[in-house]
Image (cartoon, rainbow over all chains, first blue to last red; front, side, top):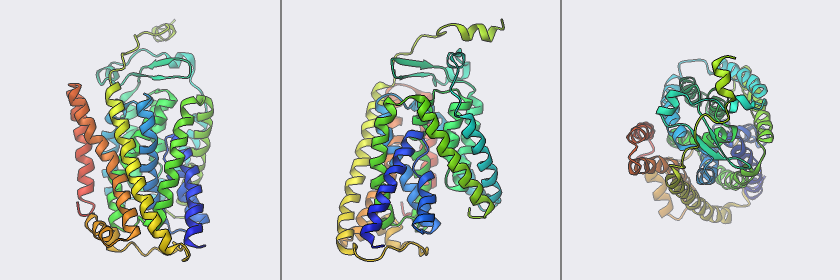
Length: 278
Length: 142
């Protein structure tokens, strides 16, 4: 394939990755890494470098819209970023000390279960929970523009969410990908944050986690300009479209897309773990 | 009926909060958009130069060679832009992209300070410190 053809095809694939990434709060890497390595025969290290670029592009591109329109909760995001960034430091420290293959298998299995769990919509009673004292003190409760009218929500189980976020950060340091999934699940399942707020706040956060490790990968020579260029431009376009769709989308369909994508991510993790690719 | 259930059945046991962070949200949203558009413009400019010169060569990423030092550090990237290299420009755009979320965190500190929210100024400072710590240790020549 010539460079011109390669650039065009990768840009189109990245557009789809950015679209899915911004709709699910997972970033583009979930789709991009397997596609680049399997279909384009890109070395995994170049693919990880490109994936990191795609995560920052999806996050910043879509977050601009999500933050302005009041979906992302910047307080939840900021508070939980403490956990994810500390976790990422720990993960990077542990990366050479623990068997990441075994970890990938466990994480993969966890994701398959979560794919099933995250399909279930919240009941009316689960939506109207009384405020939690800790969440109130941390000023995490908020509201967002739901389809008909603004809806308020009360954040629950802050310590559980914070711990999961720490795990999400550690995973991103250890495995390179997949931390967005834990972020969405921690907010959605543990903290009972409305789904759209969970995915958009995750989207807001993943850019920071990725930027923290981007320096390391750049200095190790993982970020190739010829590959990262179509990835960045394609993903950015996709994420801008995704952020327009999410605003008007039914939560039910977003949950469906999310659970399908993490199903794929889970299978990918199992495969990588069993075949020692990670 | 258990107390928790009784509470859950009440319509909304709290008043909707006023949209306190509205201004901060708009500032951060605009900052993110500017950062992303700036980096996209630089990457696009680099792409034009790169494709003009190399469009018909073969694309091959099968073997990991690692990037040359001019694409791995900030001083290297700047030198390569000075030499008029397309890929140097792309890499510069990517550096702007990486800087965007970091600038967002830094601006949040100012925003929370304006709102006199000391707790969140402290939270954001912690995040920024960890971010800078990992970037300084990364060897990109910051």
